[in-house]
Length: 127
Image 1 (cartoon, rainbow, N blue to C red):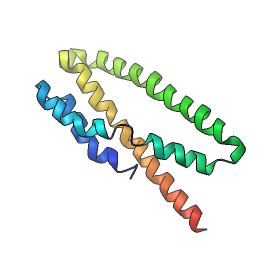
Image 2: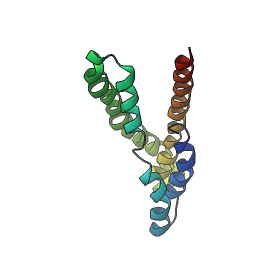
Image 3: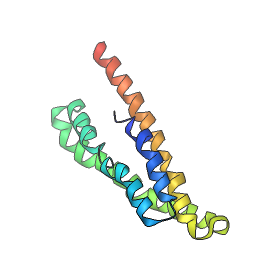
Image 4: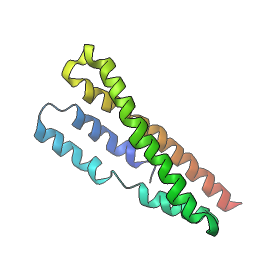
């Protein structure tokens, strides 16, 4: 489930970014907006379940949130800004939308890792 939701919501998100009018963009953002944080709860639960009891607080709160925030709030905006600046000569005022749409495809890479993780966990439980 965690791996499949981005494949469903990403087309709506990209279409919303590239929409010409505000109402269409808002309507297209409804589905990705509802599904935006679907991954946090199951991911934290999985990390808590797989961690030894004495490491649960450190693995979930500290390490996982540090990685999420460094990439999501640190590297993400930087890359979007750089790509937007590079695309400005070709796309003018639409450069930010195009940069956001392009970099949102990185989410598919993360979805692939969730899928691989699910397969590995299922195999591990069978053994």
